[in-house]
Amino acid sequence: METLDKGTFEDLFRSYFAPLCSFAQKYVRDIDEAKDIVHNVFINLWNKRNEVDLNTSLKSYLFQGVYNRSLNYIRDHKKLVQFNTPQSEAELGKYIESRDHLESSEAEGRINRALDALPDKCREIFLMNRFDGLKYREIAEKLNISIKTVETQMSRALKTLREKLSDMILVLIFFFLQNL
Image (spheres, rainbow, N blue to C red):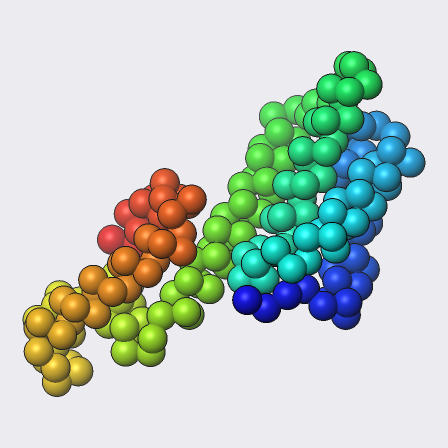
């Protein structure tokens, strides 16, 4: 397993420190506390650098860590934090849309990385079936292979995707239903 090196860590810090501080500040309402929370998340990431899987989204890992530590801070300090509530339906819609876009782009990235990890022929057959809508027989004819080979490759692809994306199964079901 590939480990997090110093250069990658520094790049992550430069890229995400400010956005993470803004994110934490929405919860704890104190910029200094927000910075402490973000620093602690980065320290934790560095301390666990040999355990972190670089094939997962480090951005999601960082934001989730900041979110969890922010909630812990609120709990530990027993502070009632007034969240910025949207003043209008339009603001609420924009907030929900931006949050949903971030979540869907992260999910799409994980799906694409899982697809990219498939062997070339396996990925090609999977994409022809799921995205081009071709039946196994049509794929076999186009690629000049047997239907049994198509079945075997599809089975391998689905097994690999299930393993790599098991924690996202509901998102995957929705994703594939949209593409049918």
